[in-house]
Image 1: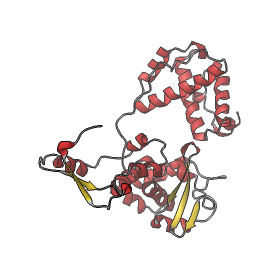
Image 2: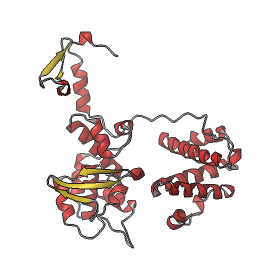
Image 3: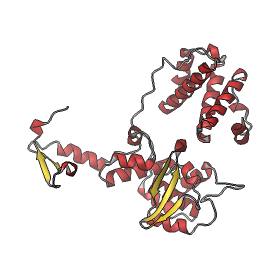
Image 4: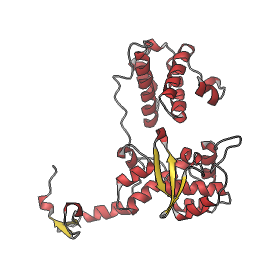
Length: 311
């Protein structure tokens, strides 16, 4: 159990039920061996440990009803994560003869809710950029101007992750689930990063980079908003200011699924007002740029609503 022994703190409340201990630790070791990130392993550990304590039964005695009642008191995201952890743990356990059935098999996937979450207001972004704490200012720019997660900010190595090109600086981002992506760095942030020295952008107290809490605390102190609200602000700005290109936003955020990206984009009330007002004109025809990909010359085409249909 190398990973867990090296990284966890000794806290009684994070220990699994005694007869679950060995299988859970073997499961974590297995995830480590197949390349799951430390963050994923830590999250799965807490999810399955809490479940083992709540049901207070042996692994083989857990039923669908046990899982259903456990999920009942959670919010949507909590349900999605807990169900997934139980399902994956039991899949692993069944292959090794530890369990004979999976209590999550007959429980439907928890649907995503409508987009939710705070978006950091522009005045609070400006407040953060005026902070006397340089680390806070950089973290705010990384979140608001590049859409980085706090763990991605903490992992930035100045020597290996920044690349100077004729078109400007690029940042190689070490994303969630070992996914890598490359982002252009805006000039305002590039100038600041070039002045930093050492290996890590945010060095730790002992060795390596800082923890995520260091970054999160500075963003919250500087702006009054949580770090993820800056990521949502970035997504919303990129979407509306660049032709509502959801694929662009998704790739810049490092999402594997565009449905996830849609949950980050806020609804701009002015856009909604324009949309509803546009429907009040009964004489309106649809106009849009013609498709240059299929050989047209870029002129504006007009289409009649009377011929519109689905499919």
